Structures are given as C-alpha cells and as structure tokens.
Image (cartoon, rainbow, N blue to C red; front, side, top):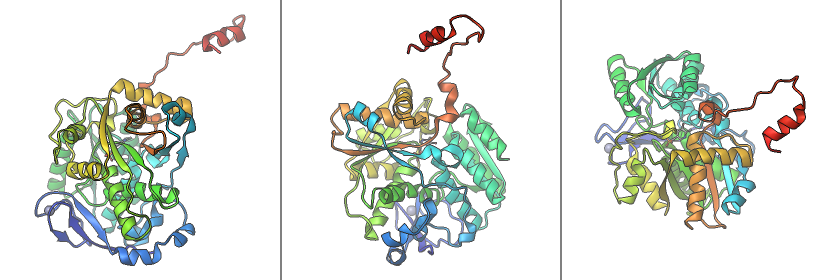
Length: 412
Ligand SMILES: *Cc1c(COP(=O)(O)O)cnc(C)c1O
Ligand SMILES: [Zn+2]
C-alpha cells in the first residue's frame, strides 16, 4: 500500500505544484489547492478484495491518502466510526432508511480528528517545526492532540467564547492557547500573522491541502460501509465546508477508480439561522458567499462567517441536486434531544442541526420515505453539557415514602 500522490492542483485556475514540500493556497490565485493522485495506479492495489483484508480506520485507503512514508502517520485511531441504522428516529421522521454516521467517537470527540491527523502527519513529513490554527473549538483540540503525538509545538487561536471543554482540551495537550475577542475569521487573521512572523505552519481549513484529504475519508468510509455505493442524501452541518467538499472529492476519486458508479448523494448543507452564508448564497444563485455579519449561534463549529472553500461547497450542492437549509438554535437543540432520547446518540449542537434539518426536509417533501438518508453526527455532545444543564430533583435518602416520591418526580 503506497500513496499514489502525484501533485497539487488549484481548484480555481490551471496552476499545479509539486507535492513534496509544504504548500498553502494557490500561489497564482489564492484559492484552494487539492492533492491529486495517480488513480490508475491506486486502483491496481486498492481493490474491494484487498480492502477486506485491511483494518478499519481512515488509513486503510493509503493509496489515495497523501502521507508518503507510513512512519510519518500520526494516529490516535481516527476513523472507522459506526454507521448506525436509526429506525426510531427514522420512523419519527417518516424515513424508512435513516442512518447516522457517529463521528463523535473519534479521538478528541469530533470528526476534526480525521482532517487534523492528516494535516499534522503531512506537516511532519514535510518538515514543519511548529503549527498554528484558528479554531472554533474542535479543530484546535484535535490539532493540539495530534501535535502532541507528533512532538510538535502547537499554537491555537480561539474565539474567547469557544466551548470551555475545547479550551481545556487544548491546554491539557500542552498547546499554547490564545483567546481572541472576535470570531474564527478574526482568529484566522491573527494565525496568518503568526505564521508570517515566526514560520509556524498554518493548518487553517482549506488553507493547506491535507485537512481536506483527511475529511475525504468520511466519503470513502461511507461508500465502503454501504458495500461500495452511496446513499440518496447526505445531511451535513456545514461551517468551513471541508467535510462536504472532501466527500465530494472522495466520490469522484472512487468513480475514477471503478469502485462506485456515477450516482451521487444529494449533498445537503445545514447552517444555523444566526450564521448561514452558504444557504444565503445558494438561495441567491451566487457562486461565492458574502461574509455573514454578526454571526451568532450555540453551534460553535457552524459560526463561520466566511469560508474560503465557498465556491466548492456551492458547486457540490448544485452538481448533486442537493439543497441548503437553516435551522434555529432552539430547533437544533431539539435535534440533539431527539438523537439522544430516541437512539442513544449524544450529538453535539452542530449535529443536532443536521438531525432537525432532516425532519424539516421530510416534512417539506424534499426527502421522501424511500430515500436512504445519512446524517453526519460530527461531534460528541459530551463537550456541551453546559447547554443541556438539567434541573434535577435532589432527595433526602432518609425521608419517608422515598420510592413513591421518586416515581412521582420521574413521572413513571
Ligand atoms: C467544525 C465542525 C463542523 C463544521 O465542519 P466543516 O467541515 O468545517 O464544515 C460541524 N460540526 C462540528 C462538531 C465541528 O466541529
Ligand atoms: Zn489558482
């Protein structure tokens, strides 16, 4: 199993670059660079039969991953997450085949592990000496963990109101955390200055080519788990959009390798009402998304007012016949409640947005009973217990009539 990485290519102009040195964005136009592979060569060894012999996890697709030397993999066991049938949620929504891909089970509790494992591995392979990242929370935590694992210094810039658990995680992994009085794009500008000033390598989403390659494994793994086919629809809570564009790239590569056909899932973008630049651009028929002013939502990972990959996200939605939808903060927390109470999946608020959007799209008739729908539960709810904060009865263990009192308060 060798990587058949061949070069980097711009997604917006005709520029190409060698892949054997650190790269950021396109030197000609500033847009997103993608890793490109010799897919013909990859298809010789990455066959369905060969894959049945390999362990689950994101590294099993080595031929179409960018890490050249296996010794440079920085891994904590990311990927290989369950694709769960969710019949109770499905019957509540009126969808016969509803599945949840539970990404909360990744190291550091979110699918950011996939992207950062890959980006940190490649940064190490290509000689980076220190890493810097702007993050709404989960990406910083994942980067801090993988940087610790690689023995590289890590610098994280987070909005001051990022989830407390993610600040604690970064600190625990020994990263240098600085809080920014602003949003993730403000943190991004600070990260850029630090990268320029000190030569730290900036692993901002889609501002280097390899986080998307890690997130691409969401699509590879999904097709693999479904027996080399794709579902009818994918519902994805979208911030920077690395996951959606990564999956879209994955499906094209799999088709070129003869592993899937030309069918594509409808790609459905979900954003909160308080920050929905992609939904607005989709509705207005734009190819780029204007910055969202005064972004505000409890789903921290979706509070991304500007996405450098906006044109790639919009292209994936349109080319797939997908759609884009907003949900309110109250509704996305209801999505968290439904997944937890009906299926035992404690999802993050971002993932709750995808759950409730699925119900809305079924109600509107966009999704039908017969569609096979996959919801991406992108992160774990365990980092967000402050948003649930139940008020619970406290009893005196010596009081009279205890069983009746408790049964009454639990309304059994
Ligand atoms: C970052 C994040 C998202 C958004 O992912 P993108 O691929 O950047 O669009 C969604 N959910 C969670 C839990 C996240 O951490
Ligand atoms: Zn370019």
